[in-house]
Image 1 (cartoon, rainbow, N blue to C red):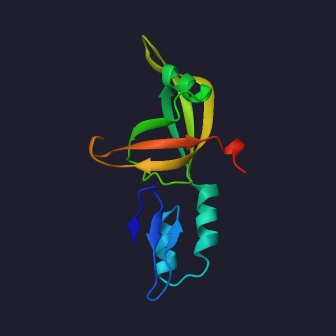
Image 2: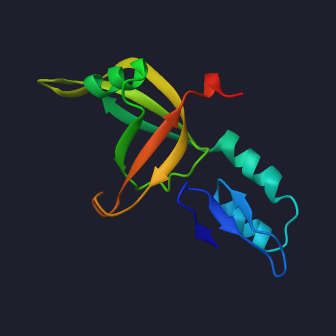
Length: 132
């Protein structure tokens, strides 16, 4: 099993055509002869949610669509299809304070490559309201 250049997991069984999955767990399930791996991939799309903080200037760029990606520390095992809830924070003299605003996005691409510091990744987003 390998991760393809579009972030999908590519896996196969002996004498079978390669299959593509958004989640590593579903790809491993397929390799282990679980014929419900497609359903698992869809289920994982609906249930993995990450809650993270984001400063106002970046929040507004994401909200407007001017910034479709974000570089983040990959300490959560982000995968394509995961939901991410970005909670806006603002800096004050007493430290960061939540504003109460949030954005929900679907992760459409996860990139870990040269040029991005080790342990970090580039996350690209889609608005889940615009999914077909």
